[in-house]
Image (cartoon, rainbow, N blue to C red):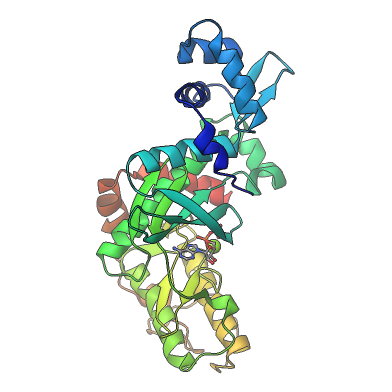
Length: 335
Ligand code: ADP
Ligand code: MG
């Protein structure tokens, strides 16, 4: 999605006041009645309606008069609220080019006052997942979590909390800088996603390092769940950084072994195909009760890893992300 931040400069205090009023109304309305927006914004002389027309022109709100005269935020409107809050806090001062388009996110470069370039990830839950999958829609229809705003915010909070906690445990992740609404600001990773890398000096070492990460995550009680060549970055020194955490689960999840095996399978397959590493790769049915550290084809065995489960409850709760949040977001990713 194009993020035209030029309009940010032209928006007045009143514009932001009304935009915020629409956001507040969306806590319990999918479409916020215009009168409610007016009541929350509290502008004099019908000023709210004039402002709403301006916001509509800039595509920051969407007008819906199918049931009653009402408005909802667009993703662009939500982006502006988050960006404005982060700029006010001094986290960055300008937005640059787009550097990534994920399944459910857009990533931009942003610059701080002193010229440091950071990465800003805007979560866009609902872009694919809800429209496409009926079962999800049915499940979400009667829930607060149907609200994409709420879900995108939860995904950002989760990503920020994990990035911070993992960084503190010296996992190679971007530095978590700040988070607001559906937006996470982090350090810019030098290098490229593994999927774009055609050659490595030491493919064996890189492979070992990456598999070592999956195992170390499990020792900390976590499974990435989307661990693949798109979410691993490599720099010129072949240093590895992992990204993209909103779907992580605990090792005590009922499908933990399946997710763990899927993560390792992705890496084995990719290295075998792209870098011709041979480990007699042969996908088995996943059952392993040998108690050995490695399965026959060299894959780490989920059951032989000594797993701690305190991470999710203690470290993440400390950053404001609770077990309840985790349960809620897991349902969206997994159902
Ligand atoms: P999604 O959840 O939508 O897959 P990702 O977090 O995987 O989003 O980001 C999508 C792409 O954006 C990545 O593949 C990568 O190219 C780029 N990207 C994400 N975070 C960073 C970062 N901190 N530094 C540099 N590039 C990044
Ligand atoms: Mg990704």
